Length: 323
Image (tube, rainbow, N blue to C red; front, top):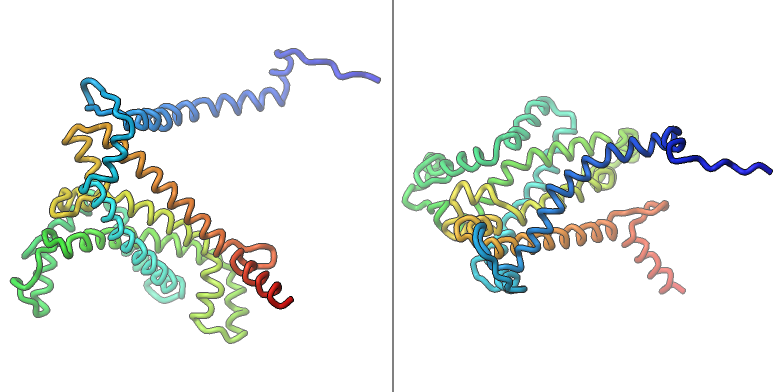
């Protein structure tokens, strides 16, 4: 029985398999090198800086976990983290509005193409420009106050939208609804268009109304997009930066976590503390993402029978109690 000859390295490199591996390695080296240089290496250095009391230039003093303790004990930082709740509520509102508008647009009404473009347009505007637009829009006596006085409100009775701490964070969060609602709407429209139309026709024959078709056919068909938009919205609400930075510069209690981190790093020159804030934010976003994935697996992922994990657990409990 003949044994296969052992190829030399040069012969293996000239073979088809060797050339395939060589091309794969060559094409992977540059992207991996760029990824390590501009992503993982800065991330490692940032985590290293978080254990030091340091400025951009000068000596460094190792202080252990003191920066992380300051993140959770300093009032300005912890208060800034709580402001994320305003943007979280705004994210949920914008998703609900985007889902409603997407359902209307895909219903076949006239003029939906123009409406879709008009709603999506704010997402194309630069975030800095959006900030300046709303800075003048909310300024006392300007656009919003002029509109309200035309419908009967007295100018003196209107609050200072950007200075009044009872409303200013809600106003800033509303700007994110205006800007990102169109993006979510377009994503939902794409997901809805992928649902098989034959299923809708069968539902109409069975006598299903519009709400039943939406809840029983549309929502299960776009659940992956809903989860994706939810993850992006919550992550974005935690890291909100442009609206408070441009419109109020973080004044009057509007400084979000990113705004305070920028101020600590670039104004106060506390690079170690800012690095610790960035690391904490990274872990918060990772934790929220994992939590959402687990929730979607528990409530949305179906097996071959079409039942979710939650429904299978309920069915199992019922069968056990019946026995």
